[in-house]
Every structure is written in C-alpha cells, then in structure tokens.
Length: 403
Image (tube, rainbow, N blue to C red; front, side, top):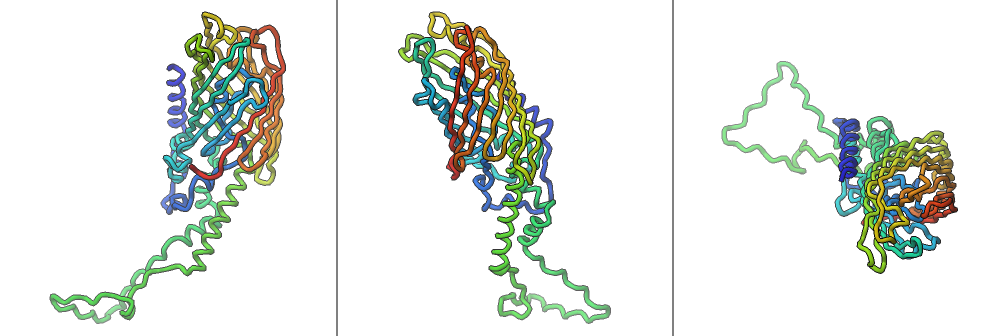
C-alpha cells in the first residue's frame, strides 16, 4: 500500500513540477484534426514494454525499463528456458487505442496529460520450478513515462513545428478559410443611399444576385497540395525525432506479483509489491546520425518478497529489498548491444535479487514492431551458495493497427 501511494505521489510531483502547458498559441491546432490518430505517431525505435514480466523475476528476467509506449504489446519472455512453457505477457496503453482514445492536442498541451497518455497496464503469467517444485506465477503492473525534452516527443515536436517550422506554418495558413476583405470607407461628400421604405424586405443574396458573396472554396488541386505538404511535414518531424533512439526520459512503474504451488498444497503467496524508477540519458545521436549511447539507471524497491528457497517449505520467509541496476547501451535505431550491472545480493535470494549481477545483451528489430532481446550473464543461485550463468531470450510484438 505504501508503495502504491509513493507511485501516485511520484506522478503528482512530476506533474506539479513540470506541469506547464508546453504548446500554447492562438493559432488553430493541427493535431485537433480527426485525420490524425495515435497510429500515425507510434514509434518503433525500441522494444515494447511489458513491465509485469519484469516483476515475475525468478528466471533471470531483466529489470524492465519503459522504452517504447505502444498501443498493444505481446511479449513471450524467457523463450528457451526450462521454465518458460506458456509464459506470456501483455500490455495495453488505453489512451493510444480506440477504447478510450486521448485527443492528440490535449496530450501535446499538458505534461500531466502526457503522463496519462502514456499510462500502461500490463499482465504476465507463467510457470516456474524452484527446488524441484512446480509453481504458477502472475503479475500486474501500471507504468508511465515522459521525455525530459519536448523535442524528443514526436507528438509535441509535431505540434511545435507548426509554430517554428516555416514549411509547417505554411500548411496551417493554407488550411485557414480566407476572410472577406473589410468594406472600404465611402469617399467624402458621397451621397447617402436612400433608406429603404419602412416595412420593406431586403432582397436575399443568391448565387444569381449580382455582387452576392460566395463561400470561399479551395480548388481540389490546392487541397491535395496542402494534404501532401502536411504529410511531408509530419514525415520530416517524425524522422528527425525517431532517429534519436536514445532520447532521455523518466519512467515510473508499480506492480504486484503472486505465486502458488501447482498442487495447491499451500495457498497463493506474494512475490512482492514493487515500485521502480528509471532514468535514461542519451548522448551521441542526432538528426543526421542515429548511432549513439544511452546510460540507464533503474532503482527498484520491493516489499514482502519471499526468500525463494523457502516457498516450498511450511513457513515462507519474506524480506523487503532494493535493487539498483545500471546499463550502458551502444547502437542505432534498429539494433543495440549493452552491458548491465546490478547490486543484487548474495544471500536470502528473492525474485528481484535474481536479476543479473552482470550481463551482456543485444536488442534487435527483426521486423516492424517485432524485437528480439537476448541477455546472458551471471546471477545468484536460488539457494545463495554460488553464482550461475543465466540467459534470457524474449520477443515483443506490437501490432501496427489500433484495437
């Protein structure tokens, strides 16, 4: 409960500290046009996030950093591991689907709405084996994230471009209806027009009436040109932003995991309630060069987490624990290599303390929306007697269309 309150307080503090409207202007807002949807702005520069998978622990799962907010993500963690059968993870970001869609302009205008627009719900479940005993485990998580720099968020960058980029401003001006010119002042000493007789009705202006005002309509060619320039502007901004795969950001997540023996000889027990804070700082990449580095620091605090080798005993022992993970990545927008280190302890091993103490890994985009994640490294044995080599191969898939 305390961790849940801390998570809510953290979001509120971030909102209060940075919650100023970022895109304010009296001009019409291009993002309010219904032709723009979330699917037009979903990026694919990093693996999709399923935070609940990281809450399960036990098999050497990496500590999840929220990297890529997609509408829907399906993850198959720990493929190839002896305890990975039927393991699956799902996440959904309601504001980016057709279920409860968020207006893009609302997202761009307010930092608080950006946190809400990135709020993701995730679920993971699967079996595992501990000390020769089979268990089922499941986890739930909620997370959110935000970029430190407005120019690193593709939606906000696109909205700002209509105020700062000459080509995008031209589109906005082209879409405005042309206003009728103001009436000229009559020349001095000009005779006044005779007043209409009392009760007379002025003739209605029709298309046949000479001098009647006609509605301003853009020719089809002009409308097509404006649409083409708008698409070119969005493509230009999106490419400039997503070429920087290592954009700096903050992420927060809170999760709860449970575990039970398959034969039901013991009741279901907690795998811990976890609050995680992650900060990514990127450098080296630019609009012209997608290569670069990223440093990630992830801190996790977990309450009521079982010591794993006591789960099959009559009395489970619970511990509160913390974990700090540092990661250095190098690569580009389609593949990365990285080194990871943590301060996982060497005794009373809990699920979070099964994180890799040191590891090497590769993230690789196999297809659009599909990423492979490979890790191999040293982790502590469940009984705490020695280190062992662990590995992790996972796949995340994000469908392109909205639900």
